[in-house]
Length: 167
Image (cartoon, rainbow, N blue to C red; front, side, top):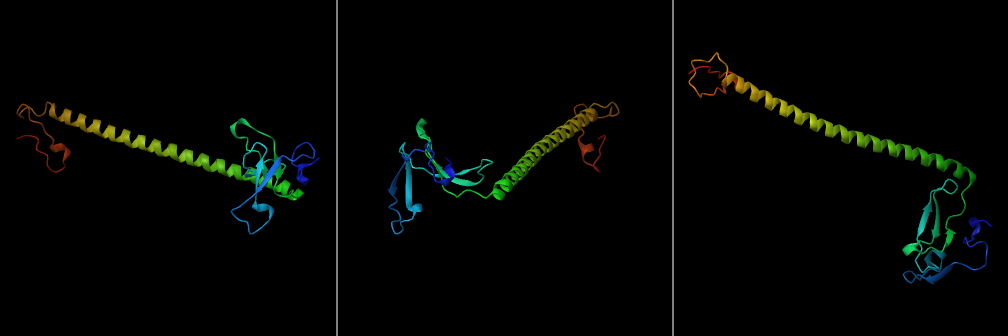
């Protein structure tokens, strides 16, 4: 027996797995949408969406299986989809999933590239600092400046136009 024709999924028996109580929040209408469905476990059943290849995007109610209890209550909310919809929607979902994964890969790549750039900038700053330190040490210990008083440090080479090699 097919569940698409209103069968509640109880093996074709006559006993229903649903109990109903009125929704007192909106009593002006007596439509089926104003009834809260409770499964035999006693839990309020929410409408969920099926994403299987045979029923993509179709809404159903089912036992939420809370606290390890699952009574198997099941009921389709939407009518069965036409053949054409069942053929097209899975392809569209696959295409959407491909685009989502491509976007995720692009974001991950951009994040890694950003981290790599930060490391390169930090390495460049470290290299410049080491170069400047070695230049200062070389200038201070270069034998050309023998007339320079002992202990005098020449930093003026780092400032163009202010070169004062000797006192």
